[in-house]
Image 1 (cartoon, rainbow, N blue to C red):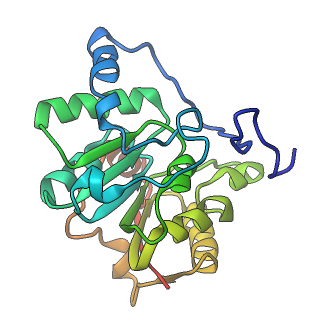
Image 2: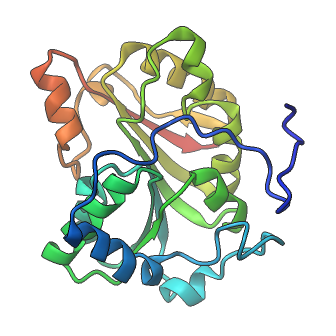
Length: 239
């Protein structure tokens, strides 16, 4: 099936290989999804409600704040931490895994309220479709699905299919951070991200061994450390 193949809705045929659902949600998590998720949408992202792919008015949605994007926020630890650390910045979190979205919404209820967080519970590529060119000032990719088998490496985020639209929506000079504990993911990141129009900012080994000053160690990172894997912290800038 070619990249040009379309659904009846007009949406491009985009394979999504990761899990969408995990274990059964509890009553509170179902309530979070039903009550909180609709008002946290960044705008009209889905193909059903926006088949023309009109761009989101970010100034109207976020009151002129700078906009950052986190791709695959897991349980929301980093997303919420950044919102607390930078209250004058708007952050759009993308996460297709329903259980992760529910965990994040619960965290926001406990630690909020937050009026600077928006949630897109779906594929980041659909969000990129409707973000204006050059509208995002920083992006994060923290511990993405490693897809360890070689035949699955094309499913990783650090491929042209994802990096090209990310590059388009980032403003000139915007920062793109990648954290991973998988050596082969580091290799692919270092090969593919510069080819997509980004400069690697490291000047020495400590620049990828040491986390960012505003970093919070997530449960995924703690699991990696317990299992003997070494985190890598890579910082790029849009050329």
